[in-house]
Image 1 (cartoon, helix red, strand yellow):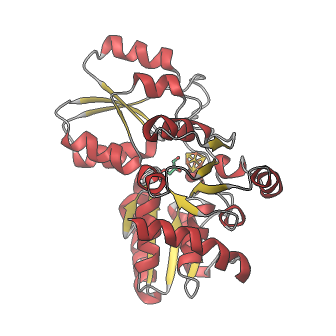
Image 2 (cartoon, protein in one colour):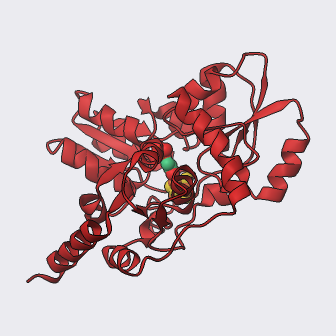
Length: 310
Ligand code: 13P
Ligand code: SF4
């Protein structure tokens, strides 16, 4: 039997025997997305982890996503196949620095993107994702001042959409900061009808040039419903797998980074997982995500507020 097929069969058998599910973000490798019980954006994945009846959740995503799953389902075993699956955006907002920053604005409420550590969530009033950020911000009375963390590009974009003047933490994601508008415009010369679609973590010049801006799931849905047949995709390249699956006759071109040799439109953190690591994780029940009880209790409040809004 083909070794890949054998590995996939072993993972499926283990899942069944242990009542486990695999949740995967859209940025995972295609073969991981294909074996997952559910593939989604960060909001869908947090909803799924809160709802599942499984005993074990194997999280094919990054650390903050697995933490969110644990916070929402503390009685379940949450496993991260590789502990190196961090997030440069979450890391751009360290606890002590953010706490000092927040203390300078005592009359502001804190809205934090889910791409933050559980410790930062414990300092947060309400969380959001790129799917529901506008709804979350609009749920806060207009006169109430807001701190938004950690992504400055998303924060600026949300300020322009909502007319707020949120104070922004100066964080960014290493993937979305790297796209080259110049190279995108070169692609446009060859594919003049291609639409540029971008995640709001991209820098302002890319967002100004974009035909559509949205979260990973919003971008995916847009490519399916829009009449265009060519798209330049300015987000992590893993999402192209679902785009091609849903619209096999359309052309999807990954937006190139400034340095074409760096492969930086791949999230190096998302891409640390593999089928082999998922098998080991499930078989040996490693690496389990655990958090101090008090942090979990504090961090759960802003996540639940966000889920209630939806
Ligand atoms: P989504 O919330 O759109 O899935 O994005 C998560 C993320 O990490 C973007 O870089
Ligand atoms: Fe974090 Fe950026 Fe990777 Fe998303 S793409 S998980 S924001 S490092």
